[in-house]
Length: 71
Image 1 (tube, rainbow, N blue to C red):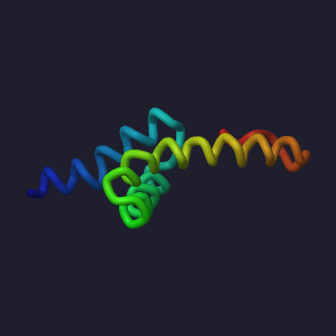
Image 2: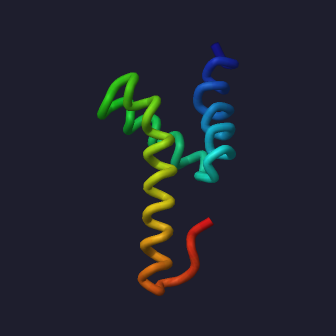
């Protein structure tokens, strides 16, 4: 039980965040929000949506001359 909790709430968000360069906390919040909004489908789609939003907002930020792209 403890291992499962560790895997679900610590290890998986950390591994997912490394692949898309998003903070683990944002991944956890995204997974919880995705589950509330879309159930199982929301869980699967939340990390790609977060990554896409990060890219879009980063490029919009840079295009406005407000600074460099967010890494």
